[in-house]
Amino acid sequence: MEKKSKLVLAVLQGSDCDNTIRNLNERGFMVTLLSSTGGFLKKKSTTVMIGVEEDRLEEAMDILQRFAGRRRETVYQSMTMPHGEMSTVPPMAMEVMAGGAAVFILDLEDIRKF
Image 1: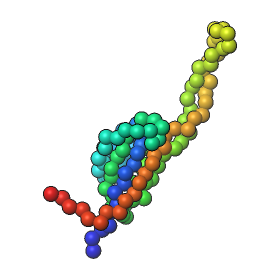
Image 2 (image 1 turned 90 degrees about the horizontal axis):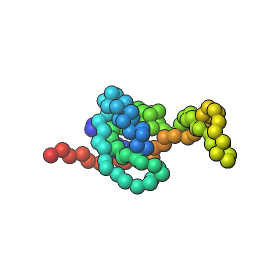
Image 3 (image 1 turned 30 degrees about the horizontal axis):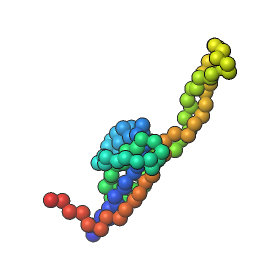
Image 4 (image 1 turned 60 degrees about the vertical axis):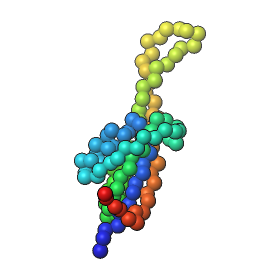
């Protein structure tokens, strides 16, 4: 019996792409980058295409979630004092939401290589 396969299309924020692909490759997933434009995630994005055997789908999803999923990050924001006063106030730490991926999982009925 032939193994069932899935096609995963994942739209990743541009800043998450390299790290996510490296981790997928290290675990034996081959990734094809697709040139994409648009504001699907409201920021620069990259679409990756991954062919996955059904029994490894959750492993691929875990990697996508860990390296490209929504998460909280700490950024340091400088403060501007009113009326142009100069100040030695150090930048303030702020938590922001980062990352995020839109993942589409498609059943593959037939795969042909020529």
